[in-house]
Every structure is written in structure tokens, then in C-alpha cells.
Image (cartoon, rainbow, N blue to C red; front, top):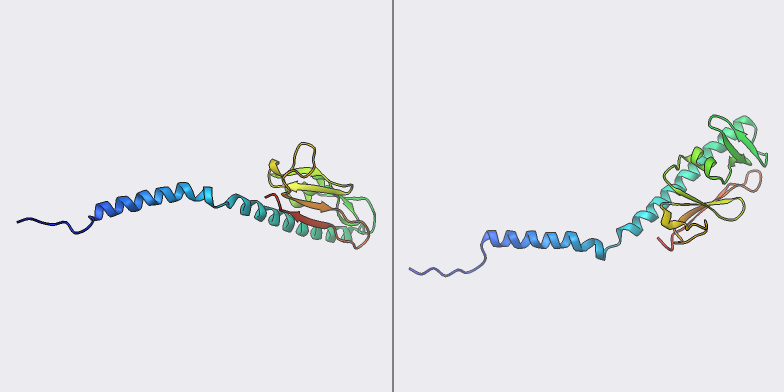
Length: 154
């Protein structure tokens, strides 16, 4: 009695599926850029942190009666403020928004740039990759700081 094989065995099908799975896992990151989306999301998070911290510091400045001075200092923690909002310096923003794992660079006077990693800013502290958040401090009483995201190079 001769037996004809009419298809693939279950073992052969499982081996093919496993091989295809391994190829998909190794090849997918090369075709899909998840890094760019992650960097843009981090910048959105930094912007939200800066907005929240600015509001909290402004509330503390109002309580202390220091919201209308061009330069003042709040205590506990010590934060330099401009019209009640955090000044655009690395130390002040780190203290206000707890942004310790980020790269800071200078922008125009009264502004600072914050990148998710060193690729966002070059050694000259100017935009290199165009992937950063810029914080421009308050310019007058009751004027909020301007926080913008540039994510063209993410």
C-alpha cells in the first residue's frame, strides 16, 4: 500500500512560522522608525513638564508677592524667577521641572533649549538636529513664558 503525501506536516508549518517571526522581528525596526516618534513624544512630555512647573512656580511667586519683579529668587528650592516664572537657565529649570536627564543649550537671550539627547544640540549650543524644546522666559508682568517644540529633525 502506497501512501501519497498531500500537504505539509504540522512540524514543517511551525518551523516556517518561527522563521518568518524571527525575520519580522529583526527586519521591522529597519523599516519602521520608532525612534523619531519616541523623541517627539519625549519633547511633548518636556513641554508639559515646563508648563506645569511654570504654573506652580508662578503660584508660589504670587503667594510670596514676587510676581511683578523682573528678577527675584524663590526659596525651597532656590529658583530664580522672571516676573514670577522660572528664569531660562539650566539650574532653574532643573530645579523647577526636575529635568535632570536632558541636554541643555543656549538660544537667544532669555531663552534656553532642551533636547532629549545630545544629538539634539551640538557643541556650539545651537540647534543641530532641530529636535528640542525652547523655553523663553517671561518678558513682563502676567506674560507667560513661551515654550515651543521644534521636531523637524527628530
